[in-house]
Image 1 (cartoon, one colour):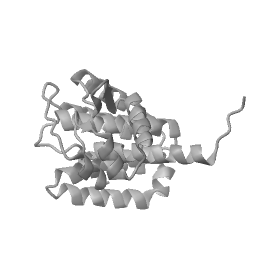
Image 2: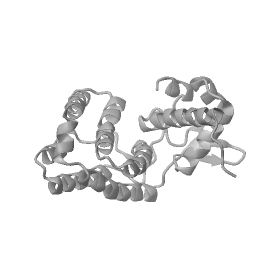
Image 3: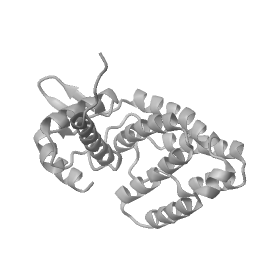
Image 4: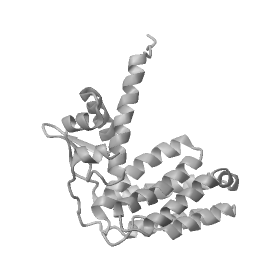
Length: 234
C-alpha cells in the first residue's frame, strides 16, 4: 500500500528537525557539555516543543552518536572515547579532502562575499578572549567549505562529524589553544583562489592533523552547564 504523506506528518518531521537542529547547535557551540543529562521536560519548556517530538529527536540524535540514551536513566550528551576521537579525525581527513577537491576556482569567485565576510569574523573573534565565540566562529569555516562544495551527501556526513568533533574538543582539547587556526584557514582559501586544489588539500590535511595534535586524549575535562539556558541562547 502506498504511504500517504499528510500535512500533519510533514509538520511533525519539520518540528523534530527543529529540535534536532537546536540541540546540535547547542552541542557544537559548547553550550551543552559531554555527559550532560538532557531532561525532556526542560527541552520541552526551552524550545516550546511537544514531548513526543522531543523523544523522537533524541532517538534520532542517538542514532547519530551525538546523544546516548540509557534505560531507566534518560538521555545524555555523548562522551566520545579517545579511540572514537582518533577515528573521527581520521574520517574528517577523508571527508574534508573530498570537500576541498570539489571546490573550484569558479566556486570561490561565486562565493567570495561570504568568504570575505567570514574571514573578517574570524579575525575579529581570534583577537578577543571569548573562547566560545572563537570555537563557534572558526568551526563555521569548515561548514562554509562544506556548503560550497555542492555535494549534499558529503555535507550531511560532514555535519555529523562536526558536532561529534565539538564533543571531542570539549573533552580533550587543552584550554590554552584555540580550536582552529585562522592563518591555516586563510592558506587554504589562498590556494583555492589560485586554483591549486592539490595545495589546498595538503594544507587542509596538515590543518586537521594540527587540530588532532592539540587534543589530550587521556584527559576528560567535561563540565555540566544549564540545559534550559543553553537552548534558549540558540
